[in-house]
Length: 223
Image (cartoon, rainbow, N blue to C red; front, side):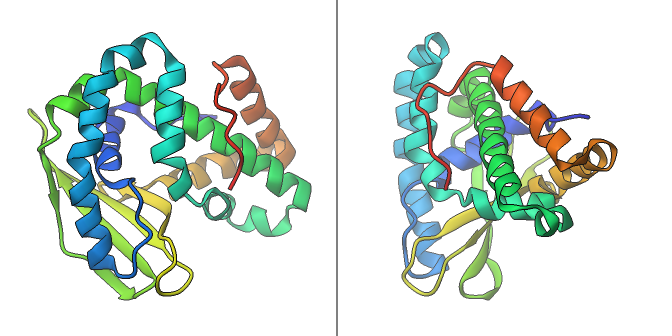
């Protein structure tokens, strides 16, 4: 089973992420985009200032992700999307275990990519163009960005966000790079594993990967 997306997409994803994952508890989609733009330079400047330290100490990278990214991701919703029909048949313990292990797996992958591609993220921080919104539901929006990097065509990244009613905090529940959804990609990969070994087999495989990797020193809690 392939448990990682191709890391070549992560310079694009992280560049967009660092620009957008600021405090987005706002009332309207237009306000969310305006706030994303406003905080982009501040976040990239923070990465510039800590780039060398991050490469020397992963704890700094995990702390950055904890503070900036994780509070704005609904991992329970992500987990439901990824498991699809298997979420509906899972018991509560399986749901909690999967959400926890998948969250740890994503955070580790994210931090690894952030460290590896920090130079590219900083050097191409001005390459983001925000595209018009696409939403028919005022509480569920797609923030669309186009990123231009040298020697490759522009790439489009879409973040899916929702809020529980006007004025509540926006939460991210999916992202798509060039039309390829993170949730859909993992759903396909994980479904194959579940068919072979069951949901517990998948959860155990994720737990093994997480246990043998560098631990998250910040000990984040699940959403």
